[in-house]
Amino acid sequence: MCDTLVAMHDAVKDGSVILAKNSDREPNEAQNITFVPAAEHIPGSTVRCTYIEIPQVPRTCAALLSRPFWMFGAEMGVNEHSVAIGNEAVFTKEKYEKTGLTGMDMLRLALERSTSAAQAKDVILSLLEEHGQGGNCGYAHTLYYHNSFIIADPREAFILETAGKNWAVRKVQGVASISNCLTIQKEYADIALCKQGSEPHVKKKGFTGKFSDLLYTYFAKGRVRKALSGELLERAKGRITVVDMMRFLRDHNGPEPYRPGTKPMERLCLHAGGLVSTQSTGSMVAALREGRPPLVYFTGTSAPCLSIFKPHTILPGQQKMTWGAIEKRYDNGAVDLYGSASGEYNPDTLWWAGEDIHRRALMNYRALTPWWLERRDALEIFMLSEVHPEWGKEEAAAFQERCRSHAVQLVDEQRKAAEEMKVLYRDVTKQPPLWFRMQWNGFNKKAKFSM
Image 1: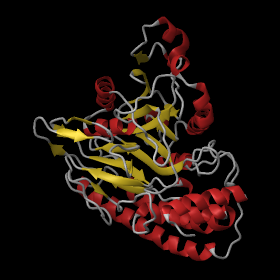
Image 2: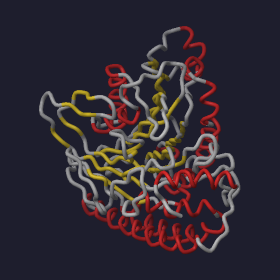
Image 3: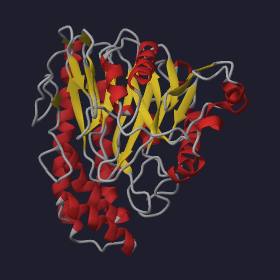
Image 4: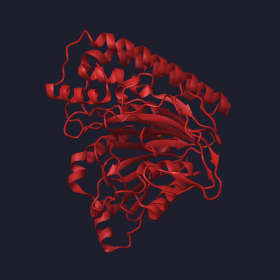
C-alpha cells in the first residue's frame, strides 16, 4: 500500500511545490534508485515494460526513479523537467486484466515522455486507452489492482484516478493526498474531467461511489491513512517545508516510540506484521520550482522513520550519472545508483544495508532506535542546511556534485551505523509479541538474512 502527498505554492513556506510519497510493498521487495538517461530512439523501436512491449517515442527524458527491483516501472520519481509523480494501488469493481501496463509502467513512461504535469497526465490517459492496465503487481504474492496518481510540476498538480479504462481527474488546490482508495466524489463534478462524466449514475455517485470496491478498500485502510495525511497537511498549511514532508512520511499515527505489531496498516510509516504485511520500502520528497533543477530526497531504504533522506538532482538532457557504488548498468544506459538490490540479502547494496538497521530495530524499537535517531537527525539537518539554501543559487552541475557528495557521505554513515546496530542488537531482549517475531523470522529466512 502507499501514500502520496502534495503541497502547492500557497501552502509551502518558500513558494515551491512539494510532492512526497511512501511506497509500501512486501518486506523483501527491495527498491532501487535508478537513473534513466535522456535518449533518442530510432523510428519503429519498442520498449519492453513489465509485461508487454509497446512502441517507443522518438525522444525520452532523463529521469530518477525509485523502482521495485523486478519491475520496469517505478513507484515514484522525477524527470529533468521537474515533473514528479507518485502512484497508489486502488481497488475497484472493474475487472483486473491479467496483462497490460502496470501503474508503475505508466508512471515511468509518463516521466520519460513529458515536459509538464499536464502532458504527463495526458500520456498516462493515452497509454491507458491504447494498452490498458493489468498484470500481477505482487512480488511473492499475487496482487491485482488499478491505480491513482498525483502528478506535479512547479506550476500545477493533478489527481488522476482510474478503474480499468475509466478515469477521473481533479486539479489540486492548496494541499492534497491520496492513498489506497478512490477520492474523487460528486462534489468535484464541476472541476473534474471524467471519461464517463456525462453518465447520470457517475454524476450522482461520483467516481468513488461508482467504482470503489468497499471490501478491499476497507482492509487496505487507505481512508484511515488519507485522513491522517490530510490532517497533517492542513495543520501545517502555509508554512510547509521539505522537513515537514519528511516528518509526515515518518508518522506512526500514535505516541512514540512506535510499538511494532500494532495497527500495522493505519500508519503512514508502515512496518510489516499482521494479516496484511506490507511496509514502506522506499520514500521520496521532491521539491519543484521554476527555473531550478528538481531537488529530490530519496531514502533508498525502507522504514522512513529509521532512514536518512539523501539529496539528488537531475540536469536537462542528462545522459550519464555516477553517484555511488554502481553494481549494474542496463542496456539503455540506466544505472542503479546504490547497487542493484534484489529479494535476497546483499549488504553491499544500500537497500539491504538499511535493513541491517531496520530489522534489528524492530525487535526492540524502544531500546535500539534512540541512539540512531539522534545521529540520523544530526546528519540530515546538516545535509539540509548545506544543500537546500544553495538550490538554485549554484550552477546546476556544481549543485549536482554537492548533492552527490552529501548523498555518498550519508550512505557511508548509514553503513557504519548498521555495523554498530549488529553489536547493540546482541545486548537487548526481544520485545515484540511472539507472533510478530515468528512472522519476521519467516521474512528473514526467505531473504537469507541472519539476525
